[in-house]
Image 1 (cartoon, rainbow, N blue to C red):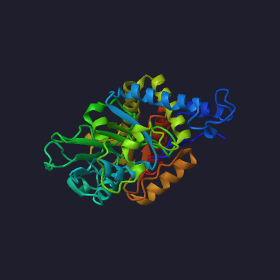
Image 2 (cartoon, rainbow, N blue to C red):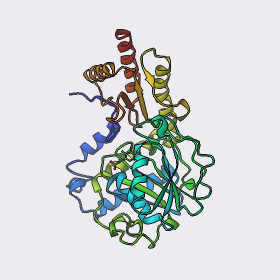
Image 3 (tube, protein in one colour):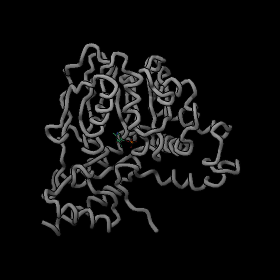
Image 4 (cartoon, rainbow, N blue to C red):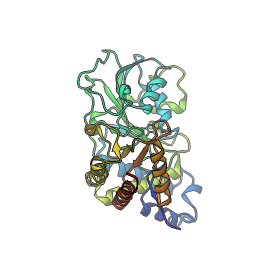
Length: 360
Ligand SMILES: *Cc1c(COP(=O)(O)O)cnc(C)c1O
């Protein structure tokens, strides 16, 4: 049985090398006689795993010392609530609505205070990133929120919004570690790891220390306070231990690839193969504004729903999995995260060319 080319948006493809290593260590992690799954999170062996994972992530992203790295649970979706509960001191925040995930975060924040939609690309089904150079950000807004890479629609903020001095909070679930970042531009960077880093069940939250306070909204559950997790080194309770272990392996794999500069170059090369084909194709078309194209999620259509369905079906039979577009937008979407090898994209394009020849 061979492995397929998996274009899933998440949970998604992981580096084969990482999976093999994990398999080799499954029954006996480094002479402990047990699997990481069976290990106390307070053990020496596990302490090594989580400490190294954080150290490698800090090195990859060049995270300054005044930022904490938290390994949390509850998915990116729980952060939609944790962010306002911890950060909305004035009970007001600005949200930029560039897709479903941003909209969900905005709706959740509205449960706790005044969420102000300062820009949106809903008018053109989120196919572009709005101009964010001069937004009407309220004077007393506690933060400005973006979803930096829109997994469903395939757009990416290539320029961060002018927040007019307010704290920037970014959901980077689907572009985490895909390119270098200047962490100092953000107050909070967070994401679920199941898109580009590891198995579902871990959320990484990188947060500037001054934003971690006791001053949270009344009624905020203990488990939803950043301070509790920060004070306890992500070990207030049992962390998602096995997931963090796999994330740690992916961090090491990324370092071996040459770090984030190198992976960005690789991602650009990969995405270009697909976008160049889409731009020249008489059958397939990309669906988003060129200047806002994501390197990670590439939606496309033929313009004919029946033909889209035929394509997805035939692609699957040929070993290209999970190319169906999100259930709310239809068409196709190829997610080409860090771990998707370049041959996967080359072979997909060759298959698309052939499909085009037979169907136009
Ligand atoms: C997948 C995704 C989410 C939701 O993640 P969960 O971990 O399932 O809650 C949120 N934001 C973005 C950008 C995503 O891609």
